[in-house]
Length: 253
Ligand SMILES: NC(=O)c1ccc[n+]([C@@H]2O[C@H](COP(=O)([O-])OP(=O)(O)OC[C@H]3O[C@@H](n4cnc5c(N)ncnc54)[C@H](OP(=O)(O)O)[C@@H]3O)[C@@H](O)[C@H]2O)c1
Image (spheres, rainbow, N blue to C red):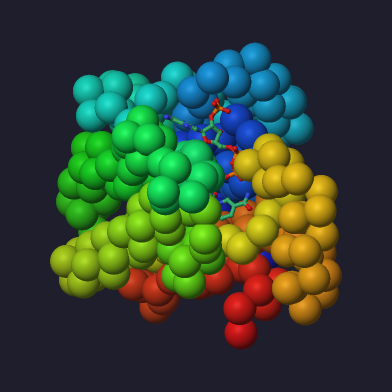
């Protein structure tokens, strides 16, 4: 395995790859030698532009964008089957797609609770279920679930999101124990505050306050998260499983 290509020959499936952290993972995985199929939901043009750019930058590697609705089991199943069809081999699943619907619990309406739960937590079932057996039968691979500092510590205004992301971490630990003997690792990555569309919605005064809580007084970049995801996807992390690793610049230490 060349030092700069730790994912050489690996087939990766990434949900929510059109923007933000997912797009950074797609970009870095390609750069590290992987073939990648990634999901988009609303941002089709952005997803196609990213795939065109990466195929041009990495001739011979596969980079395929596919429509995915991870909140729906039938749609997620279609995405998973189509994704497998585009890969010669499948080694890595990154469950990244997610949404926030921030509001105080007292004001939360059922749709907000449901959107957050279905996209962030139900997707652990809908996407992982059809993709698990290929990894188990192969006796090797990695599943990386994107959680959040919110799921580890709880954040006011994010009761549904904190609950969903805590669920992602519980799912990760239990599945790691179920399939560890098959050589498949399962880990969660918990970003803190990362500069993407998701955090762009935070009002400037609140963003400044949040930055003051971080030792380096700055939000992280999507690449800061992608580096850990790609490390966990590689053989270098073969003895790491069942962990929830925070990438938060020390937001909580
Ligand atoms: N940014 C942060 O500070 C932060 C912190 C902690 C955790 N996270 C987590 O990191 C992950 C990525 O977040 P981000 O900041 O990169 O968010 P983002 O920029 O808002 O991107 C979200 C991604 O998820 C996709 N997506 C949303 N709903 C979907 C659905 N129902 N089905 C399929 N795909 C869907 C979007 O696809 P389209 O663009 O095509 O609609 C997009 O690719 C999420 O799980 C998020 O909860 C982010």
